[in-house]
Length: 118
Image (cartoon, rainbow, N blue to C red; front, side, top):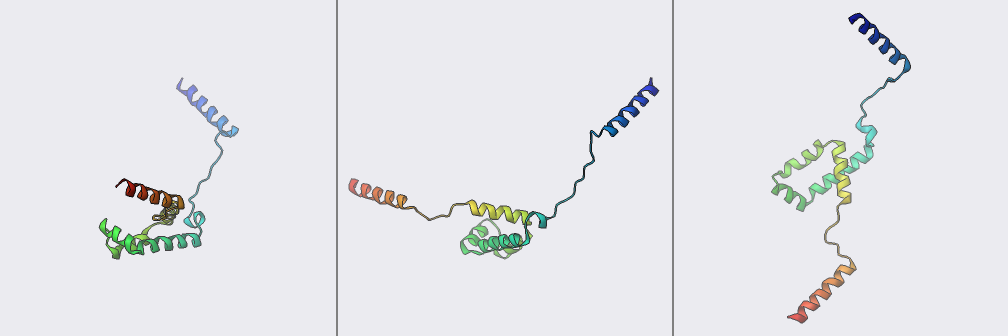
């Protein structure tokens, strides 16, 4: 019985190997230079460095416990993928303090209504 099972296993493995059910595959690591071009990575890193160098951002980072002298070192320690993700998030964030004409009109109308009620 044991001998018969060995022969069946051998026949099954040989037949599956010749049919090609599991084709050979190859995998390799992709370098950062292939994912993000050097010029894009360096320009994104410069944007992030310029952002953290702004006084209001430096003040907020210091309030969070990041000393100003360590900020540049921390930005330099980020990988290119992390810098790319951060720069992408910066592009999608809305800019503050930019009212549209409609918002200004609503503020003026609201102020007039409040002045008339008082």
